[in-house]
Length: 105
Image (cartoon, rainbow, N blue to C red):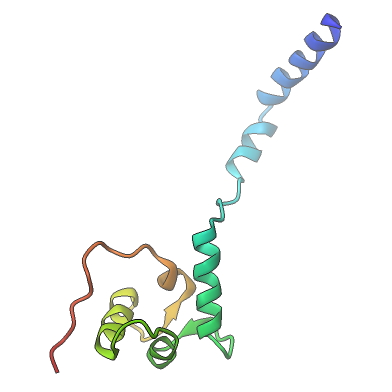
């Protein structure tokens, strides 16, 4: 039994330092969390035509918690490129601690 354990340990040691194990460690996929899955589901629900982005009108129609001015401010805060389209990455990016500024109308 000791011989088997020693052989397994030696094989694991040589495998770990052969470079194969290191390449596999670097290729690990990002951990998918429940929050990420929920965010992606919300995005897909708003992107009804499957374009891969959400317009301001789609965002306003999909978010019903706040008034229109707050939704517009939130959209503009998330729209990092300033192109009027929210991608999945922009939509799911972590929110800043500061609340979006609402323009007085």
